[in-house]
Length: 228
Image 1 (cartoon, one colour):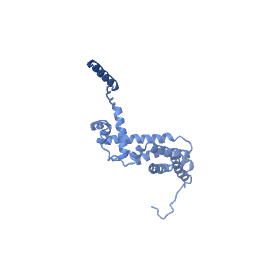
Image 2 (tube, rainbow, N blue to C red):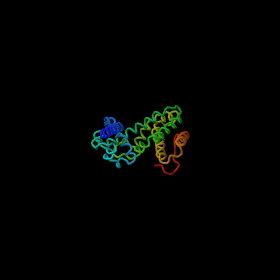
Image 3 (cartoon, rainbow, N blue to C red):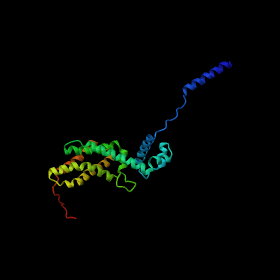
Image 4 (cartoon, rainbow, N blue to C red):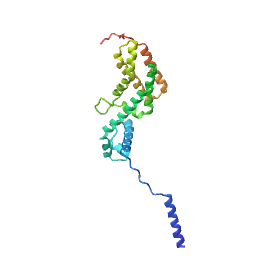
């Protein structure tokens, strides 16, 4: 009987051994993978809480690493934030630039409006980060500088149209800022309300912009009494 029990226990242990294979050690991330992980975590936290509301401790904790790892990759929270902002600005500018493919100016306006609204819809966290005030004194990485960069993509197109229609092409940069700013601020509003649908928003933006440009005066005059 003892022999039978011993044999039975041995079989049970063998079965349990097959049911519970030994744990494999977790694969250690490469430096590139760790950097991307920290950027993803930082992007999410900055979007939710802003720069001031996010700490290196929290970023490290969510990544399962120590604080020195964050400093090793980015030199601190400011460095991580700068890379996140730079990536989002590049992404948005690339989307706008690649969208401007049509030949007709009105369709170009539509494409530019859709590019920004597409970015807001698909990369909401990134847009939240871009429209927040910059945490450090700098001329780049702010919403205003972003508007300026996108407007630069548009002003050459406007300049050609102005020249063809007898308007002063030197005013094209100002009109480009006005048009892009209108779309960007409307997009910021639409991000919160999400209505009407994206195509309607784009259509109404282009309606205002295009019909405004169609009726543009060569020498606009003020109708009120103020002159300065």
